[in-house]
Amino acid sequence: MHEHEVPTHVQAEDRVLLWFTFPQLIALAVAAALGYGVYHYAPVGPEPVRIMLGLGVALTGVALVAGKVRGRPLPAVLADLLKFGLGASRFAGPISQLARAEPPVPPAPPGVAQQPASKPKRRSRTRGERMPRAPLGWFRKRNQQRVRGQIDHARRTLAKSLRGQRFQRWSAGLGAAAVVAALSVVTCTPRGIVAQEPTAAPRLPEEIEFEPGPLIDGRRLYIERLVITPTEATVVLRAAADLEVDVRAFGGVQGRSLVASRSVALHEGERSTQRLPLSGAEPSFTFAWLDEHLEGGALTLSADQLPHPLPAVEGDLCDLQLTSLEWRPSQIRGAVSSVCVASIDEQVRLQTVAGHVNQTETVVLSSDVRSLSGALQVSVGSRQTSVPLVADGTTRFQLTLESGAGIQDVALSANVTAQLNIPLPDLVQLTYHPARTEAFSETVSFPIPDTEEVASQTVTFTVTHPAHVCAAMVARSPLTKSREERLTLTTVIASDDPYAALVAPERPPTASTQTRVPEDELSQLFAQLGWELN
Image (cartoon, rainbow, N blue to C red):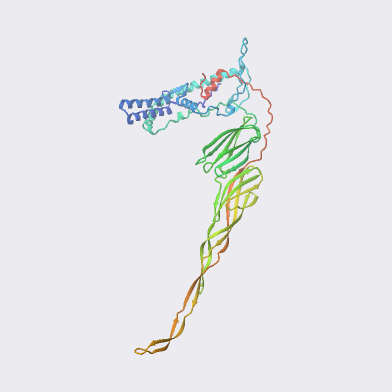
């Protein structure tokens, strides 16, 4: 009993009308609608010119839909030509695609017949399972011929059934094409054309196998120094093997724009200093490398590992700004700049009136800052240190910590004490005077009229003084007072493992061989990939 299996994995679209598929019919309807729209609505030239423009648009659409070059759609060919003309002129795929399994067979010397190449060993598959290798010889060839005959018979049967069903789909295809033509002005390019984009990775057959060599354990690239300033970052890289390093800096509004890119070659143990700009709120850096063993990798510094922007804090007495932060193996350094005030308003509980009436009020007075002192405390994990704070200057600190890769949380706190000199206004001194009466006696002399005599008389009178208060301004000496303030800064910085040289094991030399593929099997392989053998 013979068993036939119809292939269901053939990626072939149904033909709805003539040799056009349903997506192609949609695209043709769109092209026709666009041509009619250009003819009907174009505001240029007389009617013959508009007819030519419409026909040009329609024919261009038909050429893009139905045109093929050596079996490939015309849009895919145009896309390949555009990428070839404008794209990079180097291979961008993995190295494994360039490796050959076997070296080419050298040509035979003159007079010696060329030996035919043996056919490659093939493994049959049954429902996704790997079968053991079949023995070579004429038994295998006969088996292949029988399988190919079965596949050809199944294809002929499938083609016959499709031709019988094609005429039944004409009515439905024409109706759908009419509906799509009415809505084609807002219809985008059909999906069938996009699906044939040549940049998509082809589906490789399961018979192709590639076994890469064992990976070499160990890091190739280390960060030995990281310095962050407000505008740029300095990264010192050290290579543990011969590397080609591609350095890229990203930034911008969303942190995805490429702002800097360069390549550098490093030998084993060599260092390279890279100055990279800090752009945007979330900058990041990547260092992609390819070593001498054709193994690649990348090292990344993301936005959450970089202290950008550097933190700052505003206080009443001083404003602090972290101007630089540096990480080195087992050490963190930094600098904090401070800008302090020369005068400040201070709230004082002050007696304004004394004497007959006492009055005390809370007032705000302008005070002079005589001196500032304080200490800057730096803590990273369980390690802490303290340095004197330099007022109106730069305070530098250094802290030893444990080595290792990770994100280090850096906390800085400053305790500031200011000595204030507060000039006080004059004190109002009130004095109460009670009511009193004073008696006065005066002798008054006056001439007597019509005589030359002078008369005198003693006059007594009293003066009454009411109760009253007298005020006087009393000067006071300035008030001396101290004021304290605490400021805090927090940030993070990335740290890396200590440098370690790469120890690459010696690989045994392997002789590469190449197998020549027969033309019929090569044609089948290209057919599965969608290619044509010229």
